Amino acid sequence: MPLSHGPSSSPSSAADGLTSKSNDPASLPAEDSQESPLKQGIFLHTGWRSAGTWIWSRLRALDSVTGFYEPFSNVLANLSLADVSASRPTLTSGHPPLAAPYFEEYRPFLQEGARGVAGYRKRFGTDRFSDTPDAEFPALQAYLANLCERTAGHGSVPVFKFCRSSGRLPWLKRAFPQAMHAAVLRNPASQFASGWLLNQQWSNPFFVAAPFRVLGLNQSEPVVRQAIEICGVSLPPAVPASDDAYAMACEQYARTVAGDNAYRAFVALWILCALRMADGVDLMIDVDRLGQSPDYAAGLRAEFQAQSGLSPDFGNARDLVEETRRSAARMTGIDGRSMRTVHSAALKFLKAQSGVDAGLSEFVREKMVLANELTEQWR
Image (cartoon, rainbow, N blue to C red; front, side):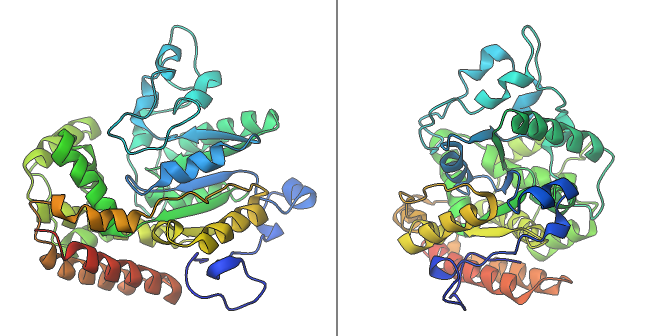
């Protein structure tokens, strides 16, 4: 698995240690392999509060790109043409200013007087962690294929920014081998802190509730149950009778949940997503380094250029690690010193899984070391 971190072993590698998977023509459809070695679109697999929206916005800014925001979002089930213009960043979102509304690119897939993006099903909004595709996947694949084909038919490159795809990443990689699959990883302390502070300051429990919802709805999967147990997560005392009912139960649970338990749930989901990201992504993006190293940002741009022909500018990335350090005093309700055991348990879980290469293990170990440092100041 290519990782965008660590020292470069070759003078010809991209700047500051970026390495990439070669574009193997055998992995592309026959017509693509004959015409171009470049990937025919980008699937950007991210997590909530991972800075994925900012990375996507840099790709979307390119004239040749059609950028689809959150193709699995529940919002798309009820979206109307009249709603699109209002879908913009709020003052509390922390998202960058956008030249167009979040869901602008879905206009051609909406009908006047109706609600819902063509082909979208609400069941797509919950990530899944089974090794094999579920019964919904053929419809999900057809939905994304339609977005891809109509976009390409207009001479544009489809770029998808997901927050609900990491568990299904191996399925999507096999279903769309012609696309570049890039994964975004941010250290768990910074990523969690971003959502926790939103809940503290603005009473927005969504990002605290989300890990409980995803874990609870997937707890029948052995690998998910193992992560829950090893991280010591206490799930809401509710039976997931339906996705919607369980989501509501998790949101109520998140309003009063103990901070330590909320962090344990977050780390359990984080490590599961990291595990799935290891399965064949074309590029792993280290968000923590992106705002600290101009060379890394330049190298990342070069990787996108080499694999997709797109050249996004990442030069003005914020130093999100330093921002986490500065916000430490505001992180109340969590004994950060006790989180070291959670980080160790999650790393142990990852290393126990079959097929995990040494590069990913080391990458995650570095993230956990950084998380130990950042959570040390939480009280």
